[in-house]
Amino acid sequence: MTAELCRQHGISEQTYYRWKAKYGGMESRDAKKLKQLEDENRKLKVAAGDLSSVIQKGVMKEIAVAHAAYDSGQMAGWGTQTSPTTEILFVPLRAGATTWGILALRPRDPGRFLLREQLPLLDSLAKQVALALEVERMSVHALGRATTSGSSRSQ
Image (cartoon, rainbow, N blue to C red; front, side, top):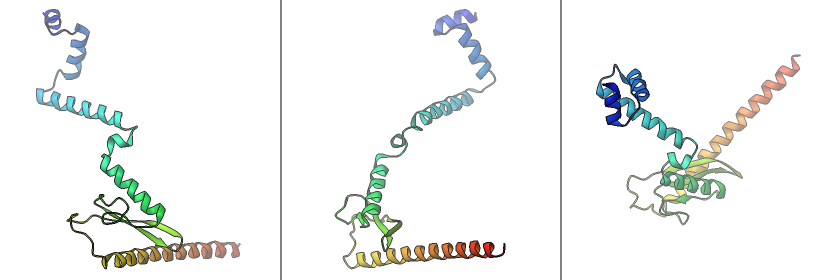
């Protein structure tokens, strides 16, 4: 009887017994969930080696615009001349010659543009944040030197 069923469904008896061992005690909904999880796992394994297959293409473009703002030290994205169609404004956090990071702003209404007066204010805010980061780094660095020189004196 088993051989007849396997022949009708086009599978070997070995496959039948393997499936019976794997799925034998499951309800049909549990077997469906397991199949979905296996399919999802297979997709994740394929995607794991290729970042662009995991992250949406739009996100990859936004990352490129953020890198451009970081590298150039100039605002890029929404409302600027550099990639104006991107819905995020990337503002470099720059103090002196050092860029500490990027401030990314996504407006609620991308159709609404920034006023000319707002850009210098936003730039000033970004510079103040960058200066605060630089002061913090300098104080940590100075504290590290004081700790190091203090421990060398005591020896």
